[in-house]
Image (tube, rainbow, N blue to C red):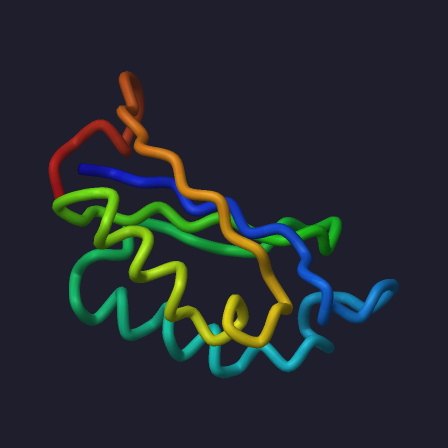
Length: 97
């Protein structure tokens, strides 16, 4: 199943600073691990510096929740994460990984 994780800025986000000045290297490494495991479909920041989005392919909501809960940026309260099951109907994301 595909899941969208919508990241919004958390209480530790430094307001007025772009994403590249937020100390997100551990988050980025965590996301790259997901890519290496084959569960990351796409991800990246919103260019208005309000958060970002990740699309995962995992078996169930519990796995998507576990991924979000263990993200260093969520743990550090730089991001808050909302998770949505997603069924793309058109385009490149409706194909199986």
